[in-house]
Length: 510
Image 1 (tube, rainbow, N blue to C red):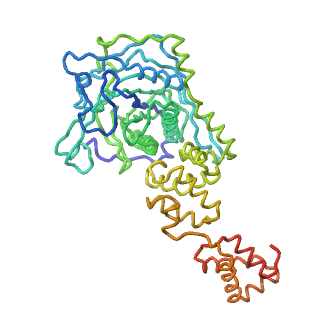
Image 2 (image 1 turned 180 degrees about the vertical axis):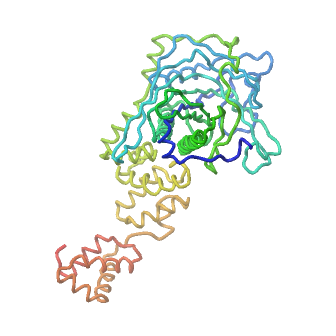
Image 3 (image 1 turned 90 degrees about the horizontal axis):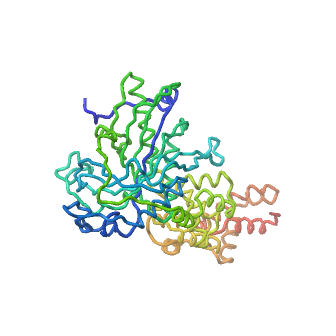
């Protein structure tokens, strides 16, 4: 039987009845330095293949590396933001293995002497009651420096993967880009919420990288990637199960799905009396499953030894504290501050955090939108679409400036809520800015009082029986009349204004 055949899975609730999940996450973040980690080649994304290379990052004989000082400072700042201890002395090591996209046949990394270690990151997940958030602490084992590899491009197949491809091409532009790997300690105790914790942790790391301005952390471009290690322990056992490592998961949604799937896949194997194989696995976004990769290597397989061409890195307390002074407001504290400024309830802020909309709402408010309108648009239709499409909120044509413009059109009286939703659909369809969409679709509230009064009078004349009910005290019957006026004006009247005008015409107190 092929190891890549789709394997059966156990119902998620059944997995949790028999096993306790354990997870370890390895997040790789490309640093946004201007040059690579050990040479002067640029790091611009999207350049023509193999145009940003030199003898050093190609591993040519006699080429000697030099450490990127800004890269080291960035990693120290990351370590501090992750509440890590910073090593006063550390060095690089060679991690030896062959891969076509690694031209040196070894990766310059760190092994037993990472620059940052023993930290933690508190992450927020929606509370079980749906009201507010719960805080889950994820402990950090280490954060160490290394270099990225090149990229293999598989040509001729339908999926872009090596299976079915006619041939492969290699682009070494990415080889040597500064990379930090953040490794958690085994995460236990999350139970059924383990996949949510995984997603929340990766989201928190991404948020932190952006706040520190050390990386754009764009998972869809590969500048941030996650390897998810998952294992299952039988209930009541203290012995860790055999883990698998799902490699290079590149979206928050996929991190959650991949962890959940591996729990269910491993649960089916163990429930059937089988043994989980220690291996790397590949995540398939289209089918929502993982397939087998290669047998997982242990540290001794890489034959680590100290890098002879690079001197150790020594930091002083003064240097570390100077970098600590550059740290921004912690994202968690910033969210609490913004929640107070915006007047959101815990539940509302929880929805905002869950949707990944904090920065977008902050930018929308800064652009002139009200906090209420900003939350409405970002966590409403846009969030629903993003969830259905498997995308992030920022992937759409809507911008904070557009949200502020749309809110202004509503507050100025040009659009009502129904019209604003139509305009939002147009913006998401890339028809233009809110004003351009409203103009093109002819969306504008009736501002001519005489025209509105004429529409009301016509509806009252055509619906005398309903008008008599309203005169007789059944004010709720006015809803039918309001609907008729809105229909007559093609939805381009203000419903509150229409109601007031109807009641006034009928001599009824509002």
